[in-house]
Length: 449
Ligand code: MV4
Image (tube, rainbow, N blue to C red; front, side, top):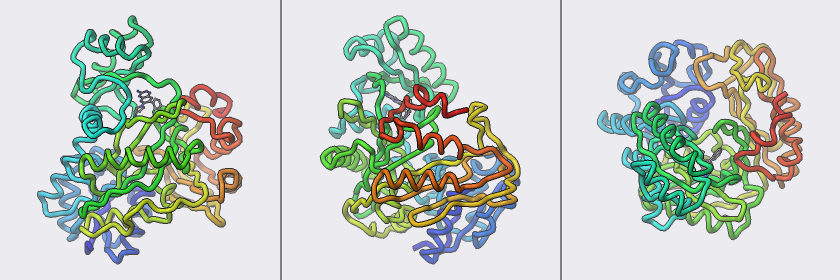
């Protein structure tokens, strides 16, 4: 095991990683920007290093400063958390070149899955179902049109370097296609410096169902069940749950097998997530693989009892996973992301001082947060200030527990999404589990007020 781990992140995930290290007897190093001086991750770590001014590009994204901080403090490994440099192959390479273990997959695995078109090709080559479409990038409108005519409209043009919804355009008909192709290509070029795009059949109302994967360096790759993350707004997840409300043992076996096959195709090592689209007719398709620990990992932790961050540390240290098969899944788990945002103002961020902070509690209630009364939510970073996760025997109990927990989560001083989430928990379609990726856009209007 490592002696000292540097956490190249901030906020709740930095605290989450510090806890896992502590439990394993590993010392920790916090890095922080000038805006995060008063943060709990700095107080809870054994050592801390200021790495620059508030903007992330001047601090949390500066690879040389992170490596220097690790060298100065004697850290032998770096955990990247999520966001920032978590899926940056160059960072993973620089760690290795500096004799520091990157707690995550290899640079090659990060790169393959980061190129969405290459990932799709790797899945096709290994017999993992993908949405019908072009096997690789398309170079012209005419080539895109050939595929569109083969599959039928609507189609979606996606940036190879994209993911998370950037550089995507839907085309409803032939007239749409030329424009969508050009817009997607231009957006991809300006956002990623890479104009490569590919074409897929567009699914109108799919669910987003993702499988948690763990792989080790001894050849074991397993899945730990799924999370339904269909409730999103502008590609930001708001609620995640497990099991997926429409899951059956047979469907889980087939989707899980496909997810593991996809991860094994690149000999995946570490914690990862295979995102799939589950269509209304029960067909499922590989969409993307995320090569990091995700925000919503506690959903899987609560339903399986497996500590995913401790598994990441074990795997990175060359040890075997603590489990060799898919663990049993017990009951039902729901997670709500609490953001300092104003739903009535188009979810505009609401930074500032938290004056009152009272957390819910009780049996089966988990809160992952870095916030406290007196904490200043900085305007520079993601506005998530807490994750509220509840476990019930079944979905109805989990829902009831979530409603009560949201009602007793008191935050004053900044506007939060808590009241919005409370209303969402009473929405008839959410209550019945009848959601899809367009749910909020199409049915959420009265929740925002
Ligand atoms: C799709 C799709 C429908 N059909 N691909 C959104 C983010 C990126 N990961 C891929 N995305 C989608 N790809 C096909 N062929 C619909 C989406 C999509 C979506 C997916 C998951 C969660 C929320 C979403 C919201 C809008 C669109």
